[in-house]
Image 1: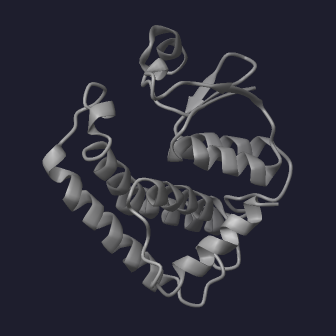
Image 2: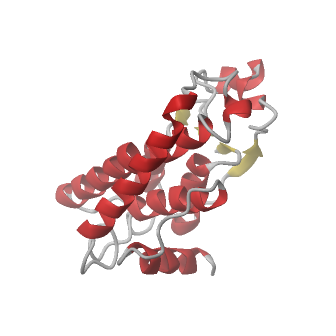
Image 3: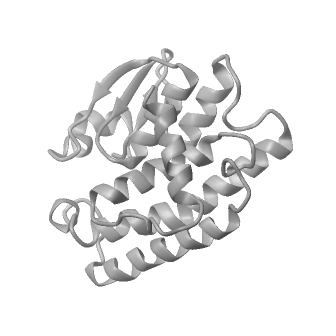
Amino acid sequence: MKYYTSIGPNPRVVSLFMAARGIQPEIVKVDLRGGENRGEAFMRINPTGTLPALALDDGTVIAEVTAICEYLDEVTPGASLIGSTALERAETRMWTRRIDLTIAEPLTNGYRFGEGLALFQSRLRCIPEASDGLKTIAREKTAWLDAQMTGRSWICGDRFTLADIFLFAFLEFGTKIGQPFDTGLAWIPGWYERVAARFAK
C-alpha cells in the first residue's frame, strides 16, 4: 500500500486517521505547492489531481478522504472509527458530511479564493469576490455546530470517530491561514484540545 500525501487538511485527515488506527503504509510525498499533483505522472495515478490517494498492492487507487478512511477502517483490525452498527455508521457519516459541506469546504475555498489565490487560480476555478462570504459561512456553521454539541464528549457522543478527526484537521488548518475558530465558543475549544492531546502521544 502506498499513501500519496502532501500539505493541506485533506491529507491531514487521512494521516491522523491512519495514526489512530495504527496503520503505517509506504509514504509518497507529493509537492502540492510546486504543482507536482497536476503533472502527468501523478495524474496517471489520480486523474483528478487531488490529494491524498491510496494505491493498493493490486494497482487499485482510492481517492477522496472519506472513501480512503472507510476502506482502511474496514480492512484493518482494531476498533472502528466509523461505527460497529448501521446506526453508528450513519451517525458518523451524517456529521462528517455536515462538517465537510458547511465548514471544511467554505473554509478551504475562502482561503483558495483569497490568500491562496496566486497558488490556485491557474489550477481551478476561483471566485475572489466569494472569499469573505465563504469565510463567514465557515465561522457561522462552526458556531452552529458548537451549539449542537452541548453535553457530548465527542461529535458522535461517547464515540471518537472520523467526524472528530475531520473537523480537527480543518480547524487546525484554519488556525494556520488566518481563519482561527472562536475561542469563546462553549464546546469546541475544549474538544479541540482533547483531540490534539490524542495525537500528541
